[in-house]
Image 1 (cartoon, one colour):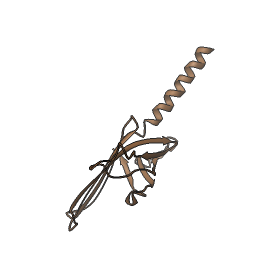
Image 2 (cartoon, one colour):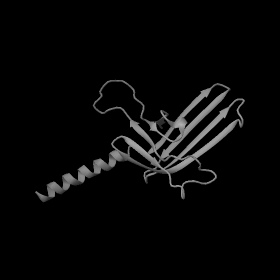
Image 3 (tube, one colour):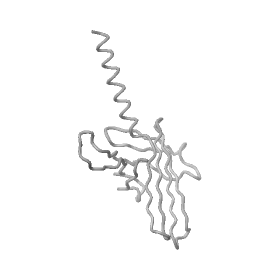
Image 4 (spheres, one colour):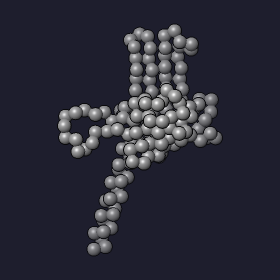
Length: 142
């Protein structure tokens, strides 16, 4: 009986761990207008709970015409909401300037119970952020 209970607890804990790793991976979004503008967002959520973010924009007639912005820090998840944080001492320097503190994103994927042919891309939708252009931004899992 003890062996059965131990086995069930082990399987239950493994499934919980497997679900949390579903969030980790690369996400991106590219917005373009042929020959004029290009905006790219790339987010990497690492298994160890850290993240890297890169925003690139090339705007025709912009000043400067090309802009790169970077951010990094830690992420954690509860239910389907991912919370981002950045440590002022460790995560900021001349390159990494974006402050992801108080940023939250919802993990959206097709429900396993949904047996229809409807295609739902796995994505993160930013709900809150101190970075004004990040709010309501969708980045899609690669």
